[in-house]
Amino acid sequence: MPLVLGKGKILFLESSMGDDISLPYSVTDFRSSLVDLALSGALHDISGMAIGRGYKYDRQMQDEIAGVIGEIFDVIVAREPEGLPIVMNVDFGHTSPLLTLPIGALAQMDSHTDEFMILEPGVQA
Image 1 (cartoon, rainbow, N blue to C red):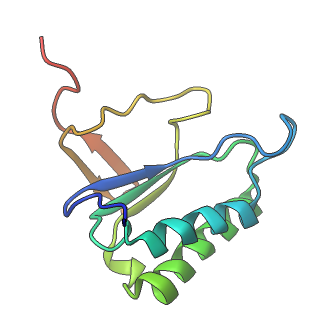
Image 2 (image 1 turned 120 degrees about the vertical axis):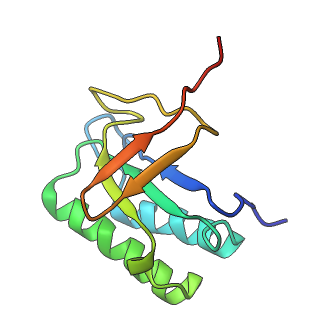
Image 3 (image 1 turned 30 degrees about the vertical axis):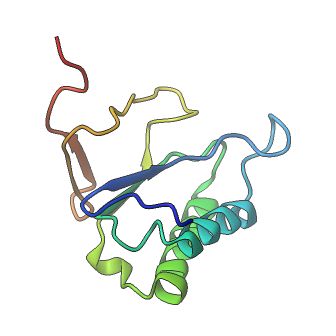
């Protein structure tokens, strides 16, 4: 059964360490995981993606990840990534400092200004 995130949802992804605490999660492994998500159908109806700052990623690896995302959307999802807001290197997940993202809260993102905003409280009083 395909993973269905639903229309209008922002998918946030992050990677932790690689095979060892001294190593980043490899670009090859990131590609494999994203291909699995794409083939499941999970990426077809999302409205945006926020990618967490990769553990021990250097600038070259960040650029490679951006290329992988574009390639997968072009080849597998058959959707132009240019129409999909994507922000990268967001401080959430296995990073320090980190931002806790409230799942299900209304959010807005703009990849041109590199902004990701939570528009409502993540919890109710």
